[in-house]
Image 1 (cartoon, rainbow, N blue to C red):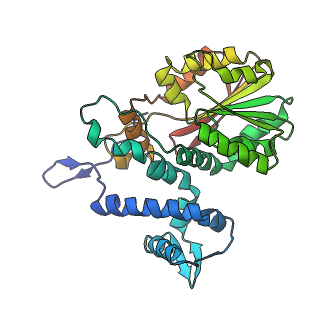
Image 2: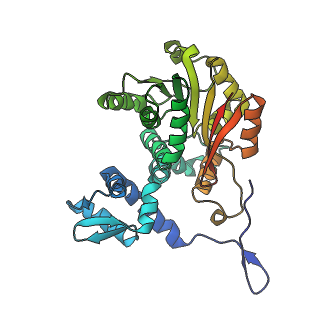
Length: 336
């Protein structure tokens, strides 16, 4: 998808694309770290839920002061509340966490990789996992649509391929109470922590978590030996298919492999970012430029909306629901 150009015309007839200012760059970096720190304190969740937040330590005071001066919080004595802009940032804190903490090690390697064709991703898995769950959580109506589709069908087994911290399956388990869930992720530390969390929440009987690759075009992964593959009726993947498709011969090739793993699939849910292009960052939806640059650094291809649609049709899947988030993030519920 190509976005419409937006330019500034000068008196001599030349044009200039809108630019970020030095203040945007420097202050934005600082604000991003403060936003994540406040999230670690639990402030954004509490404030969005209407729970009062009280500043009680010198370090909290520093963070609260910075976020107040950034226009995201209002201080009333030692109590905090959200501004309109702050409410928007609180809802989108998952994006901030991914870019500020999760992807930062990859960007930091650029200077030492000047002659390289690409920089293999070096991420902080915990922050990427938590951020991805928060991104999904900020649009509850999308997860509600997935949960509704599961609940309306005969009970089965839903597998989340690339489940991150299992936050999505935990939320869906409440929406589809008769469904069994499996989560698989390559990050063993993330899965270990999530397994403890699911047990503490009383969900271990309905949610099984496994460690391993979900790339279907590689050799058959050993974790499949622990799964009743014939019982799996729904496969989900969020924010991952573009990468798997880049490494594995395309979107259809990856999906075809999953269909071979789980021969009785009747539903697939794909949430992923699509490729958008524009000459200036200020012409793209926010987060889209960062998403684009990160994947250019790591050599991962981004795919167009048309390419996803063509792959789904090639494999005989029919789009039942489609939900767009900020233009570039699309969740599709497919059935056959």
